[in-house]
Image (cartoon, rainbow, N blue to C red; front, side):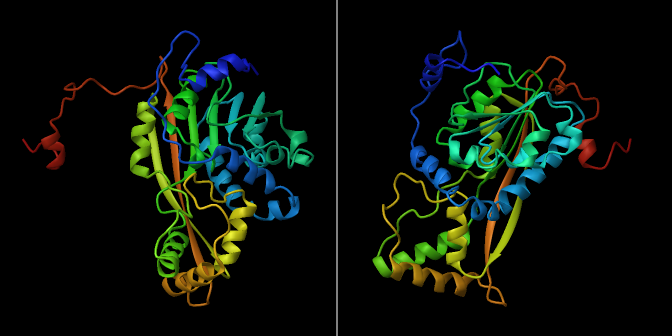
Length: 332
């Protein structure tokens, strides 16, 4: 797989779109500490058995992404899994896709997480290449992949417009980008409970749950990055927990702890945690005493422009007035 040399990669960080075209990006507002996020992912693998036990969300969303890949009736010899984690998509690829693969390239910035399951049996059935790199700046040449997929990783990216443009660049013409990311009201129950508890006990709030993109923004970002024929939909996955502390423990084991730069460093005070547990249970608790946690998943499919790609007809070329369509057809 052709990798960009380090000098080219540094150029990309300064906004180098291709080998011959230099652009000057807008200054990026840094929301997340990427080093902290890498360390969190790596630490989540210290107990591999426990880490695998909390794969339930990523495994489920990977399966739903694979369903979308199967809906596209064409072979994908070269696939990039960007932000692959422990290669959840690779583990669940059905024979109908894996048998037609020449190579599945899995990229993650945490070596420990990327190689956590490298000795498991599914590796023997797939041509997997693991690449340790930051998914914010995919280190690959232009027009490399037949498809790029990403599952539950892009919500930690600072410069999402630049990363989407980079993905478009490394795709071959008329190739799809298929992704799922956390967005919108994800974990609103935990967010509101912590905010109300901190406001009560400390008189102010600190960002405890990361800000997330809204589904209304994704279409515009993908169009800006050059993607065509967009499909975007949303699904809520609700997981129940015995208490708030079990939810927070699972988030840490998933490598999904708080990595906001503006966060307050250090553990949350015990008084705030106990108050938040009470608020959570009062506002959101179920009849059986279990606490729901909502994960809002934004699915997106976009295609890199290609010569043979279907294109909309020119404006004004329609033969039936829209007025007639809205009124139920031309009655004359």
